[in-house]
Image (cartoon, rainbow, N blue to C red; front, side, top):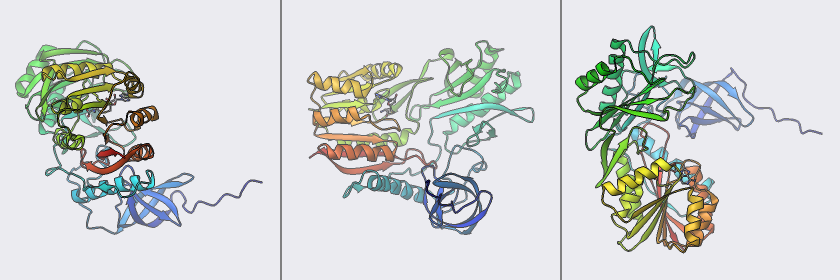
Length: 459
Ligand code: SAH
């Protein structure tokens, strides 16, 4: 006989008073009604709120914040006028100092609950002295509102454009690129792309800034190759946005959410912009991956270098190396660095950047880290330090097993997901390593994202 179902204590469209005790993965307030979890976006820990239940699942539910009955001193008025409609940020209503505290707590919770790790030092989150205007890349879709061309991000879980006049987390040059280019397109009568009908021309305006060089790039992603009055368009962009050194078109005719298409054409100027992280120079093309917060990237890589404790005699492996940013940063202080990355174009960029900086001791190979590093091990490569910086899903177990067998002195784990980080640290703890310290770094102020740099040593 089937067990009688325990009735869920909340009902859709009903109102409840809830004490908020924590923040969920995406910055939502979390509380309970008779032991049953309710996520309430925009509610904060320490608050008592009235919420209307909008969705009920088997083990949790969602509610809309109707009224804050008891508020917390951590609550702040979000400076952005469209914060409550735009999907870009999640934590502007929480003071910056509390955001940093919360991010550290997220890491502590993951390490204890998922990793079952004890006695690990988790430092205070390293935040920004000015947590605004930090992004070096803006990718903004175009649409139409009341017959006018509009730019803005999508509302959460929709493709409805929320028109914006400026974005507080963007470098001001990017705001200028997005809005001025939109005006020029509007003046020239160049059409915007419409997802529903798959007609119209310009899909996205993308701005990229080299923070340390002041160089900028404008990318127009178009649904088709021909841009009417392209020469006038280029002339007007150059005239009105003097910091632009590169104007690029990318053609994407697919019906897809992916922003970029395969074909990229330089309309004017350079194919790339240059930026620096520490003493290392990078050439960045329209589609290159480059960390979006260059100020905090330097902080994160500085920690990585500190934890690697290099004296110039070491062989270092850099798994998931992207365009070689960490590899090149460490190559300045190591005997040799070997980077591995699955995207071939990124490895092309990594090799170019090594040459650009005259770093002959950095070597790169295309492939899955979980395939290439075990092979290097079989070939007899000895590593003193292994750095990993995987995507959100964390490291493949084959890679962790190879690291355990290679027995480096130190492992430095750079992570953008505390959950998978904790899982992988547990594995390494069980296979000969000790987690010594964890440094959370705030790469994305006002969003729920938290980045960590972790030092492990061989037991
Ligand atoms: N360390 C780089 C990039 C980190 S992002 C930096 O700081 O800039 C993670 C990278 O892992 C991405 O470039 C992604 O393409 C790559 N990647 C994803 N799965 C991989 C795998 N199985 N093996 C190697 N690289 C992988």
